[in-house]
Image (cartoon, rainbow, N blue to C red; front, top):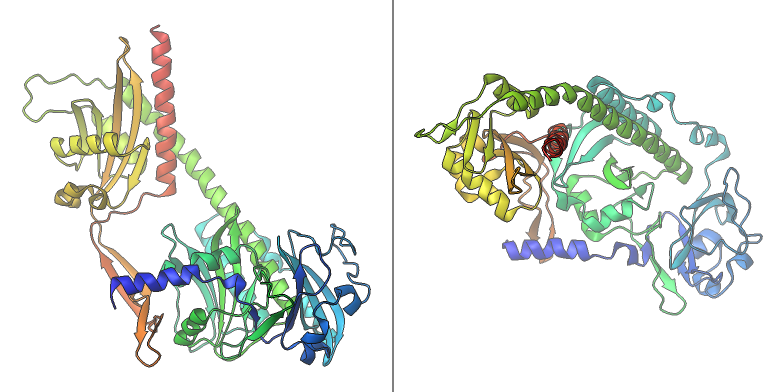
Length: 526
């Protein structure tokens, strides 16, 4: 396959209008209309099998005429849903238990309303005898706040096991998105006999951005049977329903092929949203058809939502500990900078100045680097394992001419600065802090602090070769998702150990305090 065809396939995946598919899965029925208008504009083709009324018959009718006294009161909902505002845009969905007497029993209704479309989705009500289990509160252990890495691992495992128990799925994975948008399985619970996916990564293209955006709008996503035929939605006047908030929305053919290639028959996903961003997913897989009633899915979604509190709390606690732990190191470094003197060595052949060992130790320790340098114009002061003076000056000039940021961090310097390939063994990773200052005569100067980390071969375990996102199916003459998910080991060079968020936090705080000291010195001499 050519690079062009691969890119074209990925582009088409991103362009796929998942929310405009105009079909649902056959696990329920759908009615819909336009915002502000109670008349039914959309109906699924299987409506008669669920409510005994054909779709041709209900199109154009008012929903309250079809469902008397709609909407009924909701228990425990603070926002009042009235006969006047139920078809107006709302920030959340509303579940009406046993809303409708269907052909084969009671039906629950799920009402949602986007900026353009209201939807009422009907699914079988949960049997009375089983409702106690479905409406049980979230397990207490999921509310515990993790403070250590061991606590965090235990919390992840607790969620995976609780959800596998509640759903009955064969495999439950906690899947975290990394900075490069690829995903990594950080915990899982699975039945005996399945191969573990723990620690495997999946390329970012496995979940297109448009699908990630839909996860931000929905608490769960169920695919009960990858072999089930989708049910078309009919419209009154060739309108297009917005299915962004639909629980029953039909599945992309590409994703169905992807699941089949994995050997998965049913899936259930819960987004983990932190500060408005998709932090990760809880992905549940089953190897035979499996459909969970809406109340069970809602209870599991509550578990996932509670877990996001643990994510936020653990991250904030780690950040706080890192900040408190770095204060002493930063103050020691500032003291060493203040006390150190850098007399230029006239006639020095290497162009370097060698200050106290205390300053070197403090600089290297601040961010865990193997080498560091302080550059003032032509003066270069080095510590540890570093590039040559000319190579250091080349980096400084590159920073000043090509990079606007005052703090720059990369674990792959040769990819940004081609000549760095020559000294990747010493400086594959670069963290730079630039501090502008004015001399007593009003001349602006810039002091640059540089830290380096050496090349460190990186081993990543992927679920299949990430370079083979798609393959060409000779039988159908179409590009399809990759079919291999066997563990694939990738070893790369030209990278260092990545700079952590803690390293960057220390660098930012260090720069802020250096600027404060510089300004204080300027004011002192005015």
